[in-house]
Image (cartoon, rainbow, N blue to C red; front, side):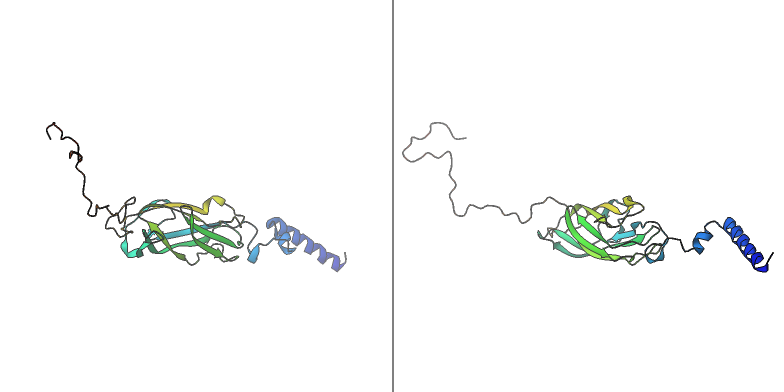
Length: 220
């Protein structure tokens, strides 16, 4: 057998043995491994929040969170009706728990039905497997109960591994005097003014009208 043929046969046998021991090596050598954005292996991203706080209280677990720390309030009598507390900082730490980089997406925060904050994320700005910097904003809340919803991918721009873990609903029970009336609790009438009878003479229903006969009934 010629020498060149022997060498070729040995090389073929070695490659065959390697492919048996390490399945998929042949495809790697051929350059057929698919890649995602930024070189991450094929899969999907998974946008979520690692943790989030408001007034030193964690809100990402949902449920009801009581806010009673006045030091976290920037100002009272905030908002269009002067009845809200403006909290210095609500924040969240975004996380990509998936297997691939993400595209652009927008996070939106609602208080009831009112949009109170929007946060834009550039493509691959939340790396796979790494914690990123906290995103921070101010928020106005009224005394008593407030429902706040956070939609991480509000416009459904990213196809994710798990869509159910990127939306949050939390109730904040604000136990602070936000409207400045000296009391804590919603539903009060503020700055109530009483109608006064300026100089008017109140009529005595028992007094007879001019020209009428006095009543013979005894006055009680």
